[in-house]
Length: 314
Ligand code: URA
Image (cartoon, rainbow, N blue to C red; front, side, top):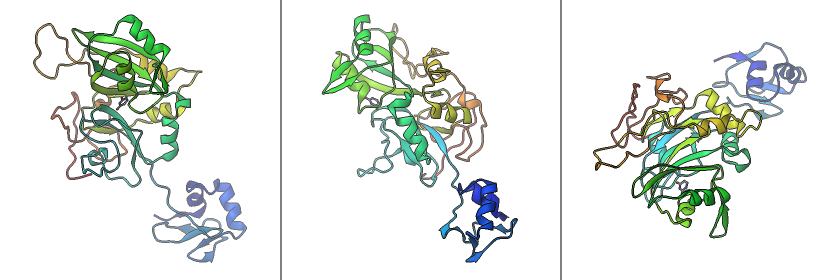
């Protein structure tokens, strides 16, 4: 599409619009090899070769921010030498898209994907303290002293690890516990719980800052809402404490059982969500919109939504 050169240069990050006019007036802008000084000259980046000081101006890529509920058994890398299914197989084929951080192949739960490197770096950096909430099924039931040890911190194989919050959600002989952490060390939840005598048999990540798994079944993804992107960028904001508050919210609904259970056992927890992702913008197939979609590995579907199904690989 043809647009004024000032607008093109400003959007591509070369300068403000006023600054772009200055660049043109100084004779530093060319279109198809010709210097363009005439303000208001138009160009189409799909067809025209526009340069500033000889540097080609490229159309800025659309930034994409997705959250996927990774099923167990799927690897969270871009490709896998063993040719297992990867998170990239479950989301649209967007140029430059990559997963932010890692989840173990046996862990289910939320993983962000983006083509915005600065965003990924910020969200991953412990300095910004984006809280991650995990639900872990553990052997036996941790007592209050053990939960306190987790909060105080434990040294595991030379790494000091601590949780921000720890509580037992449900228990019989074993327990589901909820841990909130903001670091991101390798296998941190499994190593921590193992170190205090409660090995993990199942693990799910149910929240990353303000983004929760509510309405998103394993295998489904959705675009992040602008306020979620903004919240993740802000990280832990001491002024508002917004992320902390969202991540600390208690589950609104009781966990759903995934099948018949022996009597006396409580169902596995599913979610600590505070928003109903599925109620937003349902129906669109664009990666930049918010409706959850994707083939559910488990065949389950979130309630109150119309989700599309991905056809074909990526
Ligand atoms: N901690 C773990 O042990 N595994 C994960 O996948 C994520 C956090």
